[in-house]
Length: 286
Length: 216
Image (cartoon, rainbow over all chains, first blue to last red):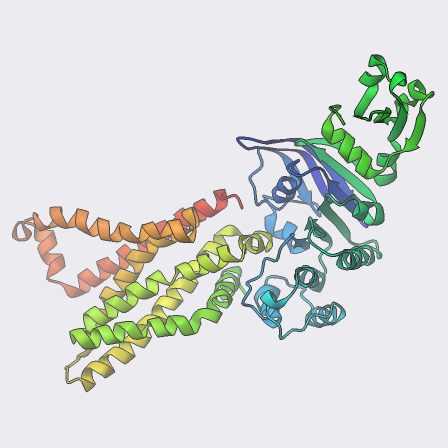
């Protein structure tokens, strides 16, 4: 099995929001960043993958198993970390293990203890006594203890300080080193993606904008800069997003359209640039 | 270990930090029984109180957003629901056994005579009341959550009032079937057991359907 996660034509309709035809796959041994502005559908996609929301249409396969018809098998090797803790605040760390371990046949108590030690989490502490970063590590420690093949993280770095973020990204990079594990994590902190992600799936306004290699994603776009007199209506139509200044403008364009912008200053685009300009959908702003 | 038992065990671990509080609550019916000098009222009160504490698992789950944990565990939703019912029934039986030991001892000390028949009678009514409350309460909690779901507690009370009126108007003497049932404790008990089982089966099926359609 090459793909640990396959999402095909996934759709979900709410009264005020629609997620339409999301298709992407995550190969074994890689990290994929799920990006998009707030409210674009990242968490909805993750919840649909986990069967916490009922899909309107589409298909999701986790490690080859359908996430609804073979839900148990699919979740047996799946680790999930949310942006906040999902254990009882009153539980001691040892109680967390007692409560969760029985659900996983391959739970390794020694590995759990070692991971706690590595993460500097004292088993005698209560969940509520842990910081947000430590609670995140506790969820990870659980996932590592049953050797979850696929790890799904929903905005794990939001609310973490830079040191904890760096530590978390190191942990994820180590986790996939053996080529037998994969990670899907949603974030709007693009710096995390630059560091850790191999693949990017970008969802904007409930629609898939891009899914593929990170380098390919960045290479698809360029930033062009010029003076006010250099901006024509024809050129404007080819621009994905534009930002006007009193002295000129800067815009995001497709690399394939670059010939038409040869007279302008061209710079590589960052993931941030792409997300910001595409989210504005061509809307001009000062 | 079977997934249903694992689920019941997980529910127990949720309530574990509150066991002392629940035990303290169980003292109230002892006082009630002592004041009323009645085993039946004491046991009935105890079973109604313990039925109310079944909302603890839902409250704790909601407070800690633990529906996300339940959502990622490799276990069928039906097993989760049955596990919760089993845990709740175990809690009910624990309360019943405690009450059946504590109440008669106290009442005997106070000079009352308590027979085995009194105990059996009180236990039967206690179990029936517990079942009556919980079969409505749990689907309510699954559907509306631990706060709004409490309204389902009043369904048995309303149900009693609604059924009481037509029942009192039935001329017992004219109905051979009703006469036979009322005058045969064994038959009455058997019918009550069947009624409780049927109620639980329906309640569990409704809860499973609610949980399967629930979006977290």
